[in-house]
Length: 278
Image (tube, rainbow, N blue to C red; front, top):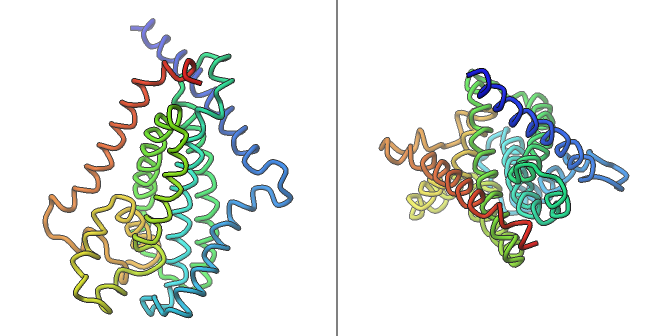
């Protein structure tokens, strides 16, 4: 028993050491050579927020009419930025680290995980900025903020699963990156990130059922849960207050777990061939 424990400790202890080293390196390399450095992790979602707020809130009037809407919008954009950053960097990580994988023996999945952890650090910084905005907007926080770590964990699992799947395919097909770049734009505008669901249900009631079905998308469901629990529990519809069926409420979580299982399965099945293919 002691030998088994020691072997597990040695194996995973080494993996954690490599992971910490890669996370530090990735995070530094991400902003290497830029004048503002890590500040870009905050500036990118802030700049996108400014554009989207002016276009969709001021000109097109696609808001829910509440004082907290700007903070809700910033929170949604920051959360979506985390997904795109995790998947975008994660899917290229195996190819980008090909030389390292051929020279040093360690589990290949650590390369993808390290990219996701770096994005998670950026997300934490962005959420602190959102918190400052929320305090200035006089947001009334509730006990629901206690659910936030679980919401972020779900969002992380979704992003990591997608990164594992796409990283595997990217080793064989470089077109995957271009396909993902197109898909992320479609998903961004299709999901209720820059517009509230209430805008569709109130302005276009004939599409209410379609709008509600968007909550079955695990990414949309998680971002709405984060907004609901962090900023605006009274105005943000979630899967919990939209659907009565327990099967509908469980659907996004089942999809998330299936995605994670498939990501781990396909990555492990192909990981031994990565060095040969590259």
